[in-house]
Image (cartoon, rainbow, N blue to C red):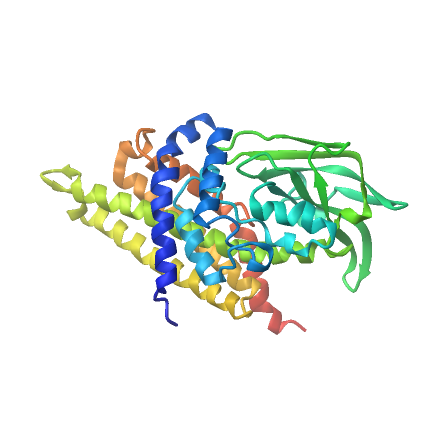
Length: 386
């Protein structure tokens, strides 16, 4: 497989790197300390991203997006992964679930997200239903031409206050060969809708400026026209997003690994102890060798998955492998970078401690490492099942 960049890809990455250096990196430390990104800065980054053609690069040209293929998107996500999500998240890649919008939904939700006029949120995780999605308790009960929704969601991460939610709720129960199974439906619900309370969640140790929100629904009434896609097909929609989303997480982890590796290598080549640079000590040099090796392996896995996605043959277990390996490799790289820096690696005046904290989240969101291992093991065992 040829991973040589095309001229167009090289130009895109050069422009994106320059954008990050100018518009993102200078604000990372302040945003982390504040636990938020000032609205005027968010708007500035968004408008500059639109001007540069980075905004909505993942959506097809037919709806006004950039129309990039998965391989090029993977390269873009890798570069964005080096930066604070609270800032880089303003270079929005609206969820592809919105392509399921039909009729008036396109004008109200899809197209405004492409132009940056609106921002969506993904309401799936609940206090009692994180990894176990089928424990979902949020209910949408049909009542004439409406649905009445009750329940709550949390850990809804987004760089800005969302204008609407893509909400997943149980609309019934189906009988299957394995017993009763909840039927889940996706809804489009505007912030400010009566019975829909949207509020900031607690501050996270990782990605502090990339805030989380909590949603609660109390007899929130929406019309059937609010259904995204088909009734009962919400999990099918969610899985399409989750599978590719895990590859994007892997790509972002690769970017963050490279940033950490470069910081560790530069420090090891300049910091002196016992009369020589610490990079000459085997204990330090071997850590750097491991970093470079794991980054190379994670890059190959991720780009292979992107190539398969472009050829419509990427599997859910392949996406899980990418996310599992890259996120856990990042954890080791981040920890070793702190170790190489020693006490300075934990000081706020350097970016290492922030990158270390931010890296921890990657093994949890978009499916924990344990969930990824479950997906991979199940795919390996399935051919042997009777």
